[in-house]
Length: 87
Image (cartoon, rainbow, N blue to C red; front, side, top):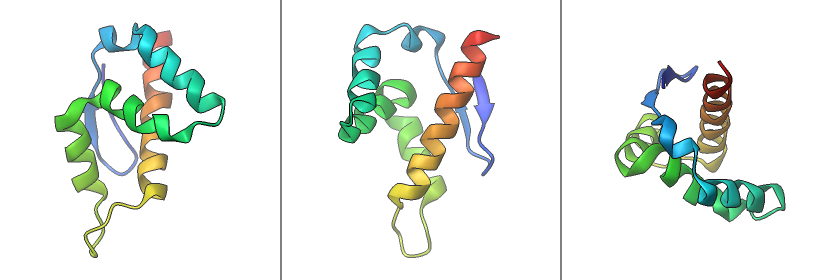
C-alpha cells in the first residue's frame, strides 16, 4: 500500500506487516496507556529507512523533530493503513 501524508511524506506499507500479532500486542499496549510502544509500532510499520525519512521530513529549522508532529504523522499513517486494509 502506498500513500502520502497531508504534509507530503510518501510512504509504502507492506500488507504483510499489518498481519502481525506482535504489532497487535503493541497497539493494545498503546490503548492501555503505554505510549512508549509507539516507537516499536513505527519501526514495525515503516521500518528504519522510512522512519528516518519521516523524521527528516518533519525536522524543524532547529534540527528537532517534535513529538507533536511525529505523533500527528503516525496517526495519519495509521488511519491510511486502516483505510487501505479495509478497501
